[in-house]
Length: 258
Ligand code: A2P
Image (cartoon, rainbow, N blue to C red):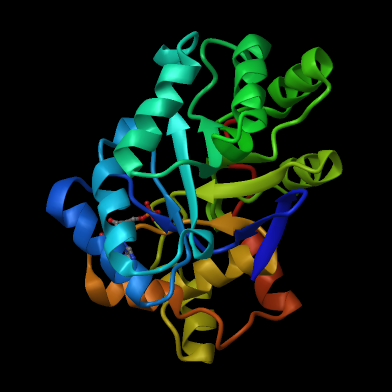
């Protein structure tokens, strides 16, 4: 299951999150993720694991085009965008990333930073560019200043943070919503969630991941555990019906802060 985030740029809805993993743990987890079928890796300069992500990718034997790679620039590098992407590419051992994100608004929307991200795309260092942790008003500010919206906004998301209006605002603008912390933000023992999982013979975590796919929201569950890495990718053998999706949507009763 993929979504087109820019002309000719196809992004798998399921990705592997790597936040809080470093060194050998990160490298082994990514290697295992690629083995069990993930074709999308999410890292960031700030995670300090780009080298290990790159090593696991190189060792996988997969061709570069088969795996979608995202990295992010930490906001304190605003003004040094070119150096920042060069450092990321060097660490990853790649000539180009598929998606490069501004990790957090650098003290505001910062259209000047966005302009330089667009330049990195033109230069071929990133196939697509986007942002993370931006509000809809900040997306609009970038658009007003440059005429170009981010391809993606990666924000904290999950059933407990579900906000139909926020999703719709992204959709209307053609900005792909990508969720992070899908499991961390969810009470995996929630009664309704457990019932739905039992009905499908899967785990609550798998239901949460599948729920994102039903909404066509990119989801990047993280795990350092081999069994859970595989389990989280095993979400294409069942689907949730409208009532189940609605029941999970209802867990997000206005809890969002943004
Ligand atoms: P672990 O790495 O030991 O598997 P998120 O993706 O929302 O950031 O969540 C990551 C957290 O959820 C980690 O603590 C991870 O622990 C845990 N986790 C990952 N997969 C599962 C799963 N299938 N069931 C329960 N917990 C999980």
